[in-house]
Image (cartoon, rainbow, N blue to C red; front, side, top):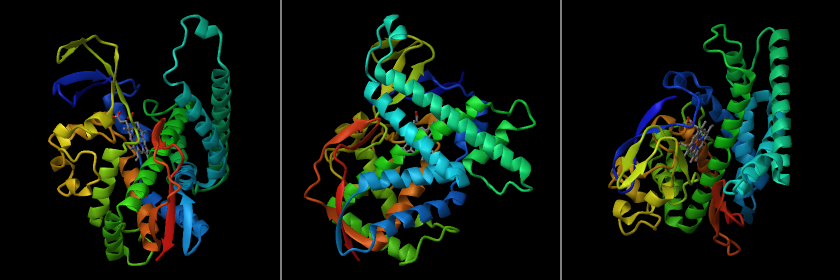
Length: 387
Ligand code: HEM
C-alpha cells in the first residue's frame, strides 16, 4: 500500500501520512489505466456530441431548456463513446445500470447496517444493487469478449485508442506483471464512468447557472470565444485552450462555489496528531472541500460571491492557502480526469456561447442537493436567446 504525504487544509496545517484506500502502489500508479485519459484524440468526439445536442436544441428565438438533463445526456454520450468507441450503444445500456446503482448507493450512503443481522437480511435496495452489479458485470464481459473476437477475426483492429481497447491490450499484455485481470477491467470501466460523468454534468450545469445570472461574465466569455474561434466550430487539431483565460477563471470560481465532489476520503496509515486530536491508524478521514472553499479567512469576506477575477493570477494567488482549493482532490490520487473534464466543459460552453445568450428562467428554484454529487434538486431552467 502506498503512503502519501498530503497537507491537511484548514486550521491545523500539519503534514500527516495517509494510506489510500486504493489497491495501486506508487509504481503501479504510472500504469493504472484510469490515469491514461487521452484528451487530444477525444476532442472530435466531444465536439460532435455537443453539436448533436445543439442541433436538438434548434435555433428557436427564445426557448426554455432544463440543462441538467441535457448535460446528463451529453456527458454520458461523451463518456460512452470515448470509453467504448464503436460499442458505445452497449456502453450506454451499462451506463443506465450504473446510474441506477449510483442512485441506490447515494440513497444508502449514510445508513447504518446492523451488525450480523445486516449480513443475513438484505434490504430491497441491497438486493436490487446486487442484481445490477451482476448484470453490469455480465454486460462488461460480453463487450470485452466481443471486442477480443473482432480483433482476432479482423486484420487491423481499427479501434484506435478508445478506453476499451486500452483495457483489452492491457489484459493481453505479454508481460505478466503488467497484465490486468477481467475483474480489474470491469473495475476500471466502472470507475471511468462513475467518476467521469456526473461530476462533469454538475460542473457544466452550475457554470451555466452562474453565467445566466452574471451576464457580464457571460459576455466576457463570449467575446473571448469569438476572438479564438470566430463563429467556427473549435478546431480539434489545435484547441487553443491556453487562450481561454476568462473561461478558466469562470470555471475555477464555479468549482469553488459548487465543487461537485463534496467529500474526499483518506485512511490514516499510522498514528498522527492533528491539532489536539490523536488519530489512530486505520480510521477514515472525510475532508469536505466546501468547508475550506467557503472560509472567509482563506478567501476574504466576499467568499460567498461569484468573483472569477479572484483567479486572474491563477489558483496559487487566489487564496491565502492553495491547499484550501480542492475541487479535484490533491496529492497522487488527484483526479485523473481533470484535463479531460475541463476540456469537455470548455468546448461545450464555447459552442453554446457562440450560438446563444442565456438568462435564468423565473421557474428555477434554487435548491442544491447532494445526490452523490452536488446538483440542483429541481434541475436548472435556462432561457436561451438566439444570437
Ligand atoms: C468536473 C469534473 C470532475 C471533478 C470535479 C472530479 C473530482 C474528483 C475528485 C475530487 C477526486 C478524488 C481525488 C482525491 O481523492 O484526492 C476524483 C478522482 C477521480 N476522478 Fe475525477 N473529477 C471530475 C471528472 C473526471 C473525469 C471526466 C474522469 C474520467 C474520465 C475522472 C476520473 C477520476 C478517477 C479515475 C478518479 C480516481 C483517481 C484515483 O483514485 O487515483 N474524473 N475526481
